[in-house]
Structure formats: C-alpha cells, structure tokens
Image (cartoon, rainbow, N blue to C red):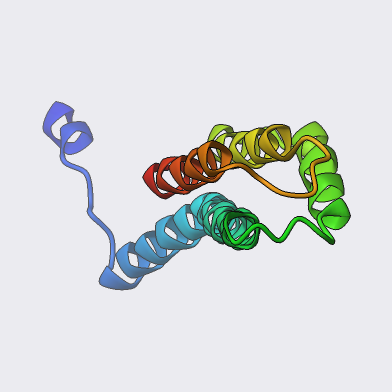
Length: 124
C-alpha cells in the first residue's frame, strides 16, 4: 500500500506536450512586452541622437538660423523623458543650445566646443 502511494504515473505524452506549450505561451506573454519596450527605447535613442547630431552639424557650419524647433524639441523632450541614455542625449542638445546662446555667428572656440559635443554624443 505504501509503495502504491510513492509510485506516480507520469501521464501520457500529450499532456506533457500541452504543459510545455502552456509554459512557452506564458513565457512569451510575460517577456514580449519587455522586449517591445526595449526595442522602442533603442529606436527612440537612435532618433534622438540623429536629431541632435544633425543640429550639431548645422551649427558647426556656423548656420544658426532655424534652430527654434530644435530648442523646443530639447525642452519638451527633457521634461517628458525618464530614460537615462535618452536624457544624456538631450543634455548634449541642451549644451549645444547654451553654446549658441542667441548669437548670430560662432567663434572658432565655440565651433571647437560644438565638435567636442559631437564626440561626446557618439560615446553615448
């Protein structure tokens, strides 16, 4: 009688396959949103870096017109963003705005500072 209680049936193969499929389905359901969020974050990081890099290129050519949209983008995005890497990219954009400081042309020293920002951005 005691031996009968200790020996358990492992069940048919179909139940094992069904259980494995359920575990796989639950795993996908749990980790797919995380994966999608991570991909979206990486995509946003690429977009933000591209916007800031293009603005740095324009400013380094001493073209300081039409940067109002960039300034608005940096201010609004900085307020809404919580990801550390994206905030670092936005900080580079904010430093670019500080270098420009409502000037019409940049000095050679300021252009050097702008190019240093480009190197800093590539390190992020």
